[in-house]
Amino acid sequence: MTSVKLDPRTVPVTQVDTHLPAVSQEALRADALRTRFATPVAWHPELVAEKKFMDRTPVAAAVLLPIVMRSEPTVLLTLRTSHLSTHSGQIAFPGGKVDATDADAVSAALREAQEEIGLNSAFIEVLGKLPIYTTGSMFHVTPVVALVSPGFILQPNPFEVADVFEVPLWFLMNPANHRHHVVHWQGVEREWLSMPYQDGATERFIWGATAGMLRNFYRFLQA
Image 1: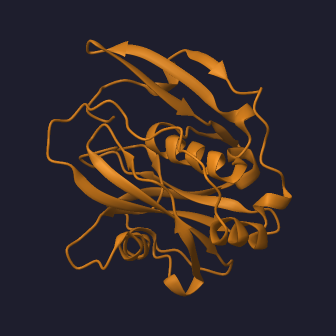
Image 2: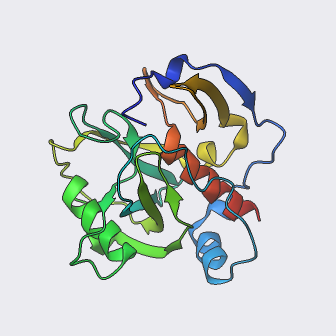
Image 3: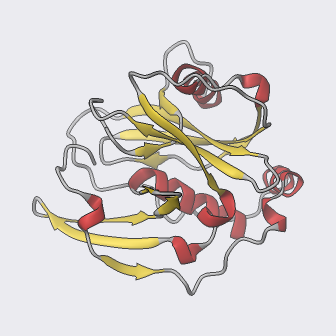
């Protein structure tokens, strides 16, 4: 939603999902996550497409949803630099366009994670994929969920990445931290989720597509 010049932090919160259950701590362990992908059950993503705000040909993309298997699992996220042409200054997963040389979305996500933040695939165990999420900027994004072993050394690409940080997985999988926003902007009513996380003195304002894909991951684990 970068073409819409709007500060998402200023948009009123219409609902917080305190009525929904959090994913249990046991379900967030590595063995439980492996089992969940190996033996999936019927479920439906809650969020599949944002209202379009760019008129262009759809672009296939892939992101890595990297779960770092610390004693308390975390999700590795990036802050995009402010000069990028799309989704600048936003919190995102490592990822980008699927290139013609990529075998599939998984290959693209792994390549992008290496190029963007220097995350070596030797530390990555791919679990599976979530349904495609279409952004308002017309990216058709395949989220690739993976476990990441600790011990990696990151080398962020300074052109694309302003910061790399981790947020506890339990926080993101607790709907009490999921906030709904609605705003009428440029003649269209737009809605999104946010999951603001206080990281010391820094607020990590997770919203839009990243929050939407995390919400679908929550639905997947709760199904």
